[in-house]
Length: 198
Image 1 (cartoon, helix red, strand yellow):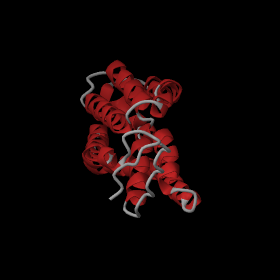
Image 2 (cartoon, rainbow, N blue to C red):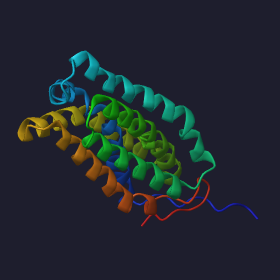
Image 3 (cartoon, rainbow, N blue to C red):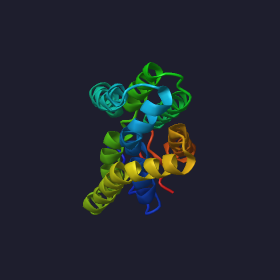
């Protein structure tokens, strides 16, 4: 029996995937403008605080290498739930970090599990179907671009307004955890099977 084709994604899914991409990719970039505040708050040099930015990039590369290939065989809903849960937890650890080593390790962990952008883009392409693929992937890509650029402004504004860099990590944790409540249910169980697109 021939495999059933994937049902096209309904319009509601497109902005959800774009927002999910923006929120998750933001976790890689939002700490960059906070490094001076982190250095002051943890009483270390700005050069030492710069290890946090390096850890984010290293973790992201590790996640792409080790975790993204799982999307081809794993259950997408479960994989998405696990990644969002681990990222949210690591963000909370970072928010409460008592020293720069803890913060650096938490950043390495959260950036390793923040690979949903690389998973969501091909999922969006499959769900969209041939007729809408370019438009849907373009909108998800726009979400990634906005997330990576605006996250720096938002985190800097939050830190300036509150006087505490930890609040930015807390906001990121809440935003990431909120996706956990809605995103997995909107994805197919596996690529190649119809998902919930309502």
